[in-house]
Length: 415
Image (tube, rainbow, N blue to C red; front, side):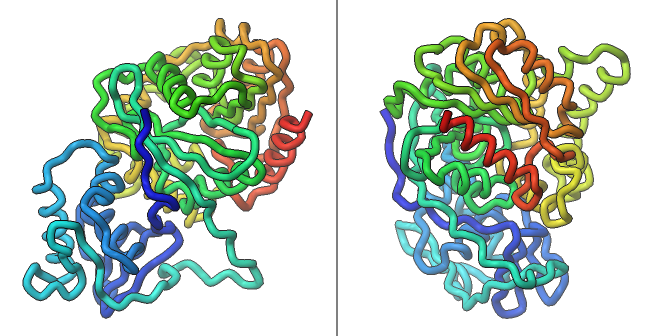
C-alpha cells in the first residue's frame, strides 16, 4: 500500500542558485553560507534545513516535510529537528525570541521570513544568449514497503506509456528534478512518458536505516515498486549499477519487460572483474575514499568520484555532484553501496534476457570502461550497442552525447 505526498513536490534548491538576504548568502552551488563574504561553518543537515526553508519561503514548512527532506523520512526524534533549527538561527545571528529569519509556526513547523533575492553564486557568470531552462516537471511522490519492511520512495512524472528506471545510488526524488546532475534525465524522459523512478534503500527519500543491503534486496525493491503501481508491461531503463538490477529483473520477469535500455552499465562489479593487483587496489580505493572523505567538509575526497563520473563536467557540474553525494546518502551507506557494487555479477542472468535491448556506453567512460558495455552486448542475445562520444559515466545536459542518447532511446521505444 502506498501513501501519497502532496502534488507537486516541494520546491528543491538548484545547485546553481544562491539566495541573498541582508549580509548573508546561502550558496547551494558551493554548499556554503557566507556572511559579509566570510564562510560560516554549519553542519550539512543544518545547511539542508536552511536551504529547504529558504527555497520554500513563500509558505511555512511542516515538521514532517523537513523530516522527509533532510532525514529521508527515517525516524528521528523531534529534538533532532529542534537542535538543527537552533543551530541555523545561531549561524544567522537569530534566536527563538526575535525570530528575524526563522519563524516558528507553533505546533506545525517553520517559515523563513527574511527578505531574500535569488542571485547567481560567486564565480558563476550569467549565461549570455541562453534560453531560460525549462521548469522541472510536475511529479507525484509516494511510498511503499519493500518485502522486508524497508520504506521505499517512488515518483511518477509526465504522461503517456510507462517507462521505469531501476534505481541507482546518489538520487533524491525531491532534489533530482532541479539538480544539474539528474534534472535533464527526469525532464526529457518524462516528455511523452509516465517516467517512474525511485530512491533505493539507503538513499534519498527511502529509508536510510536498512538492515539488509544486498543486490537481491535491490531487485526485490524494484519488484515492490512495480507491484505498488500495478504495472503490467513496460520498458525498463538501468543506469550504472542500476543496469545490473534491470538485467536481473528482466531475466526474472520476461512477461513484464517489453524492452531493456542500459546506459553506462556493467555485468561485473569492480572486485569481480579485477584481474591484477592494480585493478584490485583501484577497487579497494573506492571504499577507502568513502570511509575517509564522504562526510568531511573538505570536498577533495569526494571530487575523486566527480572526476570519474563526469570528467568532462564544468566546475559547476563538479560542485553539483559533490552536493549530490552529501545530500543523498550517509558516509556509512556510501561504503555499503560501494562494497556491494564491487561484488555484482549478472553474467548468467544477462544470457537469459529475452527482450530487445539497447546498450549505450561512452567510448571513454572513466568509471566503467567501454569494454564492459561490450561484454553486456555479447551476453544479451537480442541486443544492440551504441557507442557515445563522451568521457562521462553520467551524461551531462550540455554534451552532444546526451542528444544522441535521447534520439536513440526514442527511436528504440518507437520500434
